[in-house]
Image 1 (cartoon, helix red, strand yellow):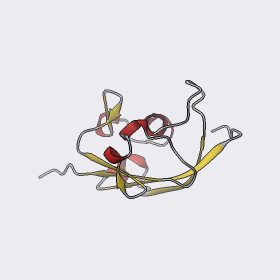
Image 2 (image 1 turned 60 degrees about the vertical axis):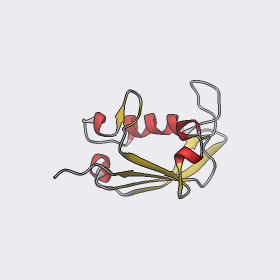
Image 3 (image 1 turned 180 degrees about the vertical axis):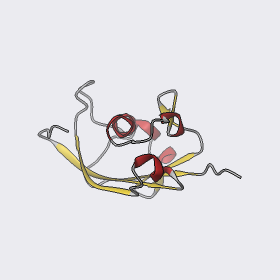
Length: 110
C-alpha cells in the first residue's frame, strides 16, 4: 500500500472463524490507511476499510463469506472501539487514528 500523507494507523481483528479467511491471522495491528479516501476525496470510513480488507488482506476466494452486496455479511458483528457499529453509524463511520475494528462471525455450522 502506498503511504499517504495524513494516514491513520488502525487495528483490525477477526474472531469467530473469520480469521480463517484472512490467513489465520486474528489481528492486523498498525495498519496504515489514508485519512482521505482517494476515490471519493472524503474521509476514509468503514465501508472503504471493508473493501480494502477484501482486496488486500483476504486470502480466501469465497468473499461472500465476509461481504454480501458490497457490505459486511449479515451475521457478522462489527465492533468499533468495543462499541456496536450500529451505534457509530455502521459503514459510514469515519476512521480515526488508533481505532480498533473487530469483526466477529456469529454464524456457526452444526
